[in-house]
Image (cartoon, rainbow, N blue to C red; front, side, top):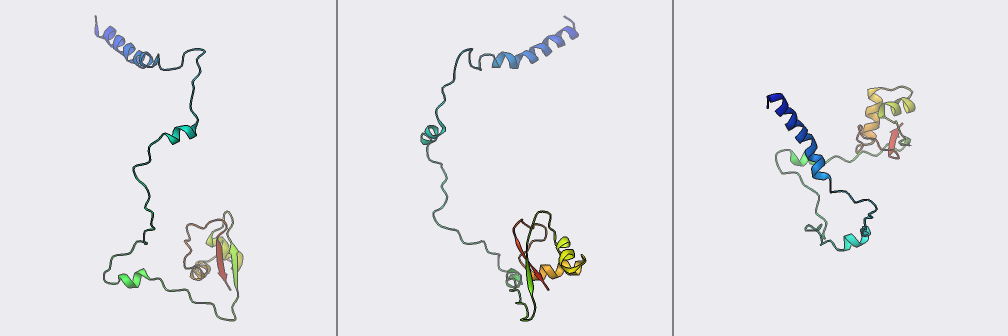
Length: 138
């Protein structure tokens, strides 16, 4: 046998191997599979090895170090002066701080975006959710 014939024989054998291994794996003709309902199968399973703790864990804390106390505590937002008015915008699909600054202040600018961010200290400017209430200062 020359090399070409031998290579073809090995190639053919490699191609046919998966077919030969899976030939008897499927159902036979006119055979139905009798599967148990999912509820019955779940009841026979053993309980999971890990169970969630029955108590609530405290929130994670930052390690103490120089300046840790000052950076961990965020100052409370200052209430608006008595004479100022605030509007609340309910976020809709496609809203950005840039578009809101243009809608409520007449033009979009970084200064107007900063005003909105200062009025909403917990607002993540990259993740505005639909239905989220955003305070628009006057």
